[in-house]
Length: 637
Image 1 (tube, helix red, strand yellow):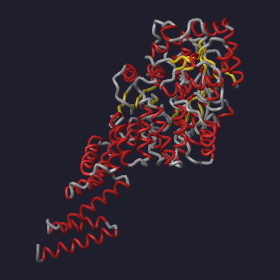
Image 2 (cartoon, rainbow, N blue to C red; image 1 turned 30 degrees about the vertical axis):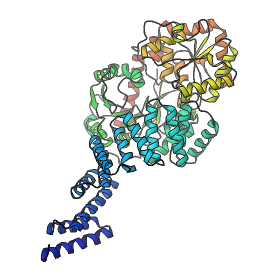
Image 3 (cartoon, rainbow, N blue to C red; image 1 turned 90 degrees about the vertical axis):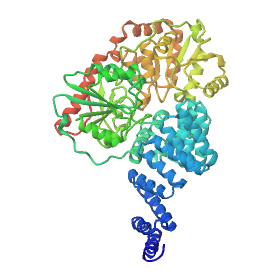
Image 4 (cartoon, rainbow, N blue to C red; image 1 turned 180 degrees about the vertical axis):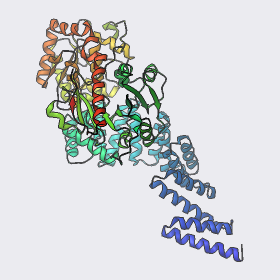
């Protein structure tokens, strides 16, 4: 084009390039658009506008304005549809907006143009991960690593999926490689130690744990709160891990203005979880939800987990005044919904466990917020007002270990469900691989809870009781081989370890009748696993530690009247295990007390428990109604 319009186009194009060089993107976009309006065939203007829009999209993405970024990338692609980098960034914006199928399609388009683009490979794996297509995502992470072996985040993403699939040894290898590449990456040392513990790879265990704990106490993010809870018995370490996580990941936001909608006669309870389906949480909580006094309380359930079709989920839905499916909503949207619903007390059933949405509570879901049941320890968050506990879990001297105000129930903090089914038929010992006539010690905790110290105690107990066996629910060839090797090194024939295979809940509970004594782990105790054993009539021997997670089984055995089975040292633990194995009449009395009328024991008396829990909630609500701050208190029996 020549003449005045050509001169106008060239001048506008020059202004656009100058603005682009200075980083003045809005001016560049306007100038290039003017150039194209004057001369639609001007290649420099078309390319310059595409570049300015691409950079504008990057700026918007970095600022969290993902819809604006998507618009910029879409406009850039109209001008240059075969720009692989723009397609990758467009996919990333779509992913951040929760539009996972569209994001995946954008990454696939980019890879058709640039098959070796490491970012496109990695982002495609993340999109598949978000879509729940785990096997494809694992393969996609592998493809990303084939292009860029140093991609730490790809190794971490694949490791998470491998762990979820029970492929713990493969996950450990990925995490070990990631640690070699990025030894200073936050929480990675803890993740590696947890992965090693999950396959009972104990080399360097004590030294690595000491590094992890010392780092946390120095303010270094060496482990996530969950890993600190699972592996360290120190309440101080656990609190530091929680507080550090909150500051880095979920700090308090500006306090919301509370709606007055929840100021009626009934207290509106909001239970928040990703586990409102067949899960340990619902196996404990189901009857509590059903027994809430409908004259005094409304029960709202906010589910951000999978929308399964199972009996446990149906039961929670039926027990709720309102059931809210919020899995596709953002934290801000969920918090706003809870405020609009007039929730008086928001109850976090997740804490720092898998699938947690702590951001909901950071944004303020309710005037009172409670850490309950799902996470056995403090959340270290200034916006979580209360922690539900009991006297065994948090004695007077331990209150300061928790950032929340501690509310202690009179029996145990843990609810239980009298409808928890046991299969009517108990299998024979031969059917499950147990020797007839042998004393059977049972340890059904997950592998990561088995420390070298605990296992050594178990081996000394087996050595003292001739012919006895240890029945373990440890999955995976790597973990089983490691434990068998550790047993052999301590003079115990590996055949004395008997492996239990996974079973449905009712059958799993019923087979525990075949065992003689449950041996707990430390520093992280059995939780639901211990109450399962007690419900099945199997006594639980535990060692009381210092932290919440190290005292859960003590809480449970006290609540069934068998506090004598909670001891204070490994020496006492081994001695009592041996004494009980040699005194069958004493053990029979313990079993008989559990079998007589389990639903009448305080641990399993659901109506009694609900009365105590509701008393706690009512008192929390009343303090808030009176304008008083949260304060610790005990609920009387």
